[in-house]
Image 1: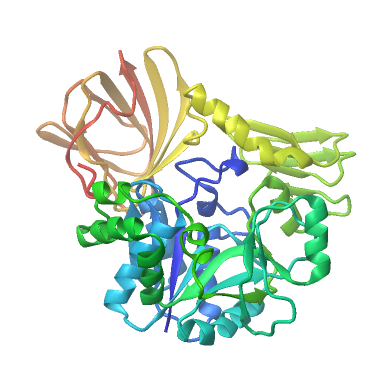
Image 2: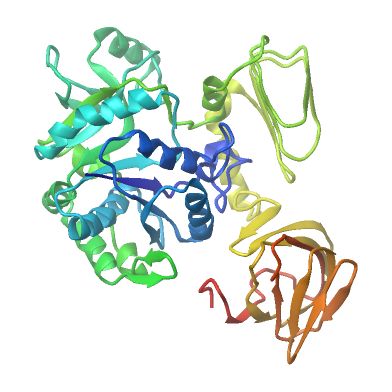
Length: 469
C-alpha cells in the first residue's frame, strides 16, 4: 500500500502578492478551479493500491487545509501540525514515525503541495515504476526529464550507460549556469530534481538515524509528545523546535547509498515564480495569460492577473502584472525571481502585506477590512452556516454590528438576541460577546470598531468551537 504524504508548509514568497504567509500559493486556485493542494490530493487517485492521505502543514493554515481536504472527498489519514517550519526532512520524519507505527511495511509517497502535473497517467506510471525499488529498501526520488536548459532547478545525475526503470543516483547538482545546463541536457544523464520521494518509512528513519540523529531524536520526541486537537495531530512545540532545519536531499539523499531515481514525464512544474505560471497555462494568440477583469492592448507574452478591479495594460511585452485588493506587482518576466526582495523589504518595514490579504480567513468564515482611521475600523464579516465566533471580549475597543444578509444570534454578557437584515447591536468595551449563524445560509454583517487600540491581539477568549482558547 502506498500512503501519500503531502507537504504543505511553504510560504511561496516569489508568488507575492497573491501568495501570503497566512494564505500561501498551495491554498490558492492558481491553475484551474481547484487549489494546488486539492489538485495534489486528487492526483493520488490515479495511483494503484493507494491509502488515505496524510498532510503536514503549518499550524496557522490548519483550518484552511482541513476544509480544502474535506472538499476533495479523498480519504484522510491525518493532518499533522508543525509549530514552526523546519524544512522537508523533519516534516517527512514525523509522518514516517506515524506511518511506521500505524501501517508497517507500507510505502510513503512524499509530494509537495504546490506542484503542477498536467499528465496524470505519466505521473502514475512513474510512481508504479518506482514501487519495486522502494519495496526493496531503496530511497526513490523522481527526476523530471528535462525539456530545456533550466537554471532554476537542481539536477540529479545518473551514471552513464545505466539502465532503469530505477537508476542509481550518481550525484545531486545545485542550480547550474546556463552553459552547464545546456551540457546537462545534451548528455542525457541529468534530470530535474522534483522533490518527490517514495520509500518505506522504516528505511527513511534508519537513514536519518545514521545521517541526522539529532533531527530524528527531536522529531521522535515531538511525535511521542503530540496530542490530538479536534481533527489534527499537534506536534510538541518545544521538541520540534529543537530539530535542525534541513531538506530531505541534504539530510539523507546526498549521503545515503540507497538513493535511486525514476524518470518522470508528466508535464511537471514547481511554479516557483510568476513566469512558471505563465509557462504552464494556455495562452492567447498574443502569447498572453489573463485572469480576472483584464483589458490588454498591444501586449505580448505577458501574464495579467486581476482579483478585485479592472486591470488595463498597454504596450507591454514579457511582463507580469498581478493585482490584489491591497497591492499591485509589475515586473519584467526575466526578473520575477527577485520578487522575494520586495517581500524581504516589506518584512523589514513591518508591514502586513507579506502576511495576509485584506480578506482574512478564519475557521468560522472570513473578514475584510474596508476602511480604517486613527480610532476606527470597518470590516465586512462573513460567517459560514452553522459556525460561531468564540465567546470573547476586547479591553480597548467597542464594536457595532449591522446585519446585511442572514440571521445573527448575538450574545452580549447575560442576554441573547436574534438580528435580521438591517438590524444592529452595540458591543461595549469589555462586554463578553459571541456571534453565531444557526441558519443554512451565510451570514454577512458590517462591523464598526472604535477605540484607542484596534489590533487583532486585543482579544480574550472564554469558549471556542475551534480550540483557540
